[in-house]
Image (cartoon, rainbow, N blue to C red; front, side, top):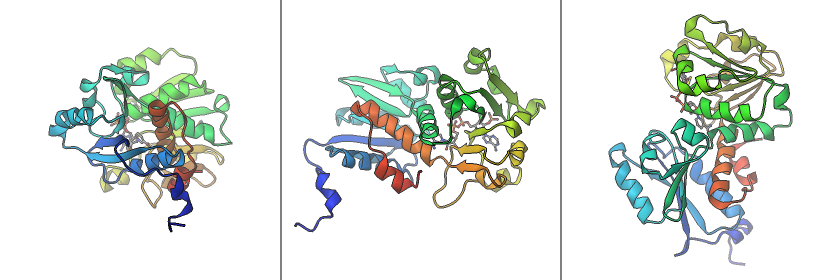
Length: 296
Ligand code: NDP
């Protein structure tokens, strides 16, 4: 016995062969990603480590070049670099190419590739819940920004009963992304500033919030959007992509009794699992990270 806890036995420790991963953003001190990925590596007994990479916007180019020289194998990208970092990449894959927005970067030799795992993260979380059968769900997706678009693509690929996107402003639906998908069966758009009815929200049996409502402070909270949420039937599932450690998000606090509510920790866990699969070629054991995050 060397006094180490039993679960340390599979941790190889850091040495000259350790492969480097991280999260590039500003701020990143609050990020749960280092804890999540290091648990994935530990569960698989892999000689890999994941670190926070706090970066000033003016230094993005220098930092990216340094990550290349330091032979990072892959990294995640968060605000404010999800668009800006694409100028350093040789190729964007899948929905990342359609959105021009990445959250995961992988390397093949000297080729740097951008991916976006947000949509697969949300969809993967839904699929992990026993009660969800997407073909029987009338889904309302709140928001029309980057996260919403990635989620829209992932949900559409799984053929829900219907998929209605509700956004505060209608103008986003005039952009090429939404115009391209407007004719697809079951797809609808509701822009609230155009005076359109919120009824699809109240009638929905699965709501995904991909707006940043709640991050804007007291003034924003005083005028809550989407009153239709107050009429959701018991048993409806609501997933908020946002999360705030130790408390319920502003949106989830406003739901009627009997609604089954989940915050964004499940999406975060599953999008990390997808990034890990891209880097390593196999799926991680989510167990320890799910327990850390409190994800069912
Ligand atoms: P964007 O800035 O691209 O889009 C923001 C969206 O939120 C827009 O549709 C905007 O509407 C809407 N919005 C903002 N404020 C309000 C409000 N007060 N009332 C109603 N609608 C509002 O942001 P992203 O798409 O990049 O991110 C959206 C959220 O997704 C973030 O809060 C982020 O934390 C979360 N997210 C969570 C992840 C996770 O792992 N759990 C991963 C990625 C994102 P409009 O067009 O009218 O301005």
